[in-house]
Structures are given as structure tokens and as C-alpha cells.
Image (tube, rainbow over all chains, first blue to last red; front, side, top):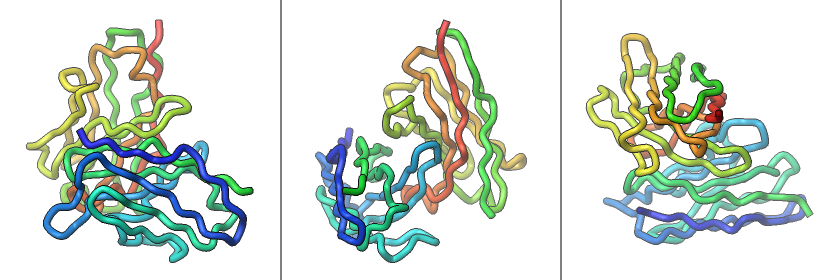
Length: 109
Length: 119
């Protein structure tokens, strides 16, 4: 099984950059694509896709969100952070079946 | 507008069965892989099952394999999750989701159906 590890929480100030990491125990690259995706979930709501295939911005998502990485190390960056970005962020791999990271709760300082 | 609406949740005793439905609209249902994902109260997301476009291939994690069955009716734009031998640890909100493309991420999610397994 592919295991995804995220830090549980991150606190940043408004207008600053937030960098959320996701590390996998196996390579999730395959034929030029990294099968890593990122989601945002606010309390009481369903998750929303932010980034697919490591670095592609999903439809309707502001350019403040970006993703990068390959192999086993990935990051989601929010720059600048706005108040509405307080949420839990999940990474998810689809290279071998599907698994989610434990989530990173983004809070404001 | 893409819409996914789950129904069928509720309170069920351990060992019993429940069937969830998810009706899709706003896209060509038969062209997309579909998923079920669950979230236990206060916990993270857990993938539960996947089904390809014609229903001929299905996938499950070990935690539900042999107990849960995903299926779809492309004529009715509906995906189902049959849950048997339910356990207390199956208590969760169950979301259905649509893939952008196979293995490319889930770009639309329903509001979720709550399932509580308790005596």
C-alpha cells in the first residue's frame, strides 16, 4: 500500500505563504505523470479538488494555489494566504489504487 | 452544472446491510469513473471503492473488500454502494465523487450520506 504522510497542522499569517507537504513511501510517478492530487475541505463541506497530477490547477481554483513535486515528495503552496483558506488540506495518490494523506489543518496566526 | 446527490444513509445495526445511491447530472455519466469515499466523524478521508466507465472493473481497499460492492447503472446515471456485514467502524459520511479522468483526481463530490452503525 502507498502511505501518504502530512504534517497535522500549519499556522501562517494573512498574506504570507503556506507550504503544505506530502511524502509517500513509494514513487507515484508513471509515464511522465505524477499521480498526486490535492483537496481542500472546510468544516461541514465536501472536499474540493485544487490540484491534479501534482501541478495542474483544477477548474475555478485561484492561481494563489499551486502544486509541485515528483516521485515521493510533493507540496501545495498557497500564496498569499487569505482568511477563507482556513481549512484542512488532503493529498491523494492514484498511482496504485487510491489513498489519502491524513490531512493538514491550516490555521491563521 | 455537475451535481451528485447521495441517498440511502441512516442508522443500521451491526451485521446488517445498507445500500447507498448517488444520482449524477450535468455531465455524461457513462464516460467517467466514479468513486465512494468516506469520512468517519472527526477523521480524515478514506477511499472506499472505484468503478470504471462500464462497470466491468471495480476496486476496494482491504478494509471493505468482500463486504462492500460498487455498481452503476449508466441508463439511470446512478452509482451504488451495497454495504453488507456492517461494523461500528463503518460509521461515517459517505461521499460519491466523479473523476476528471481515470486516476486523475476527483473533481466533483456530493454532499455526503451519513451512515451510523450502532445497536
